Length: 72
Image (tube, rainbow, N blue to C red; front, side, top):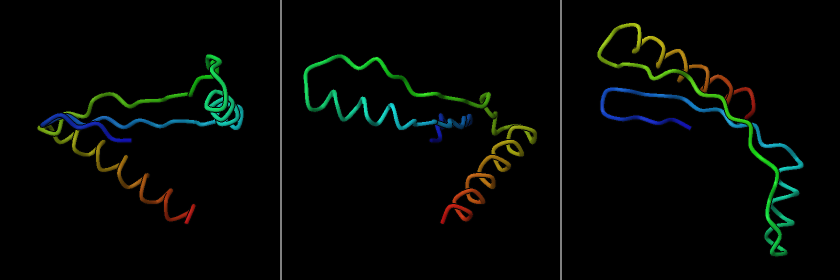
């Protein structure tokens, strides 16, 4: 997931476990509260006005594209 606000960009990565999916399915079938959570990692905000921020954004986008190519 990518968040962008005018000249800033941030990248998020989620880890969705099997137990989370199972809990989500269980909650949909009943009225119980869900206790499972997602794991989340986020980069710092990349300032696209500076070359360092642009470079960091490009590195993250290239990593996303490479990962998708590996996963198919």
